[in-house]
Length: 134
Ligand code: T46
Image 1 (cartoon, rainbow, N blue to C red):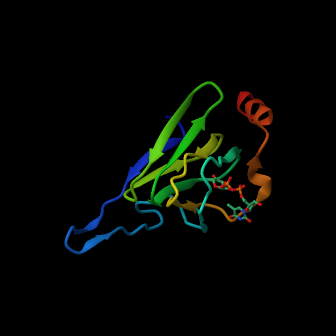
Image 2: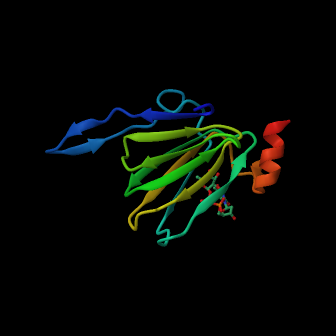
């Protein structure tokens, strides 16, 4: 899907010793990492997101548990299940995202290409539709 890719991270280790994954900017993470944040203890039934970004690249990795991410371009939408720490969802601009079905133990870490700026958010769906049709 345009502006979205699934990244598969190489892991090092074994069942005996456990596993290690290293995330490195401009290597398996395709941008300079300016910010890392995470969400956890999200109560059952809560939905988050409901916004798009104007100029932000992010990689979402569900380190524990599982979540669903619905990605919407206005005309097309697709839902991704993140349930494995070796998988990243790489989302770029102009994608409306909704994150839901957080399992009780879900920990979502996000690597971002820019520092936090509320000005970069489009939190109104009709404004989002207008922005992508221009
Ligand atoms: C995204 C999804 C996957 C900050 O102060 N700094 C930060 O770096 C972030 C991300 C948020 N905030 C503040 C802004 C809000 O007052 O924390 C509050 C909660 O943020 P929000 O409601 O946007 O959280 P989510 O989980 O709905 O969305 C977040 C990211 O904002 C968003 O970019 O793609 O995670």
